[in-house]
Image 1 (tube, helix red, strand yellow):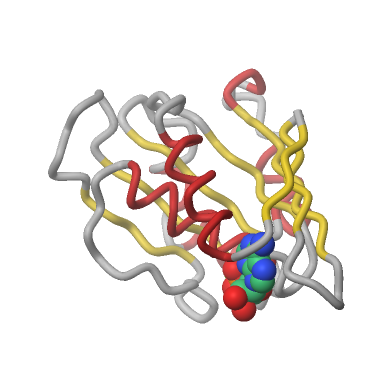
Image 2: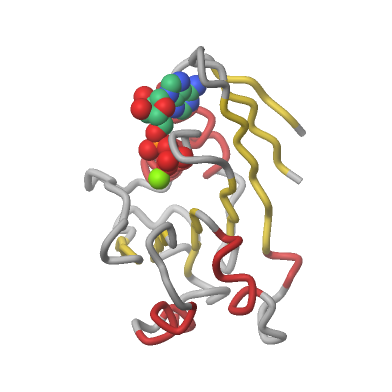
Length: 149
Ligand SMILES: Nc1ncnc2c1ncn2[C@@H]1O[C@H](COP(=O)(O)OP(=O)(O)O)[C@@H](O)[C@H]1O
Ligand SMILES: [Mg+2]
């Protein structure tokens, strides 16, 4: 499925819609260049999950953890991972990423999933819960193509 958005607001809105389909244990792999709109999409998903905190990319902390107080579904936690500055996958293991990935009550959103291929290949993770979302970026306009496969 591919959709086109024409502003960051539209991408956020799509994120809100997408959030309604999420269930605990889901892992969304957000791929796309710098400035594609991965974080914009995360902002929408967070809003849709009832998170009121401002979402900023965990560029240096690698992983931000949000408590979901408005528990409409069984999702209690949203984890936002950004591996852009990651040098070794073990850095993410050291801060406990495996306590969250694929856990029943948790949704994980991963920017730059290509950088943690080995962690994602772990046999303990249910591959059916992983969805790849690709955001295609056009340099000279606000148009983005978002593909879910
Ligand atoms: N349709 C769109 N969807 C998302 N972001 C857009 C769109 N059009 C323009 N932008 C801009 O592109 C940038 C996306 O930034 P961000 O979400 O941080 O990207 P990423 O996390 O992929 O690096 C923002 O500056 C945003 O205002
Ligand atoms: Mg980002």
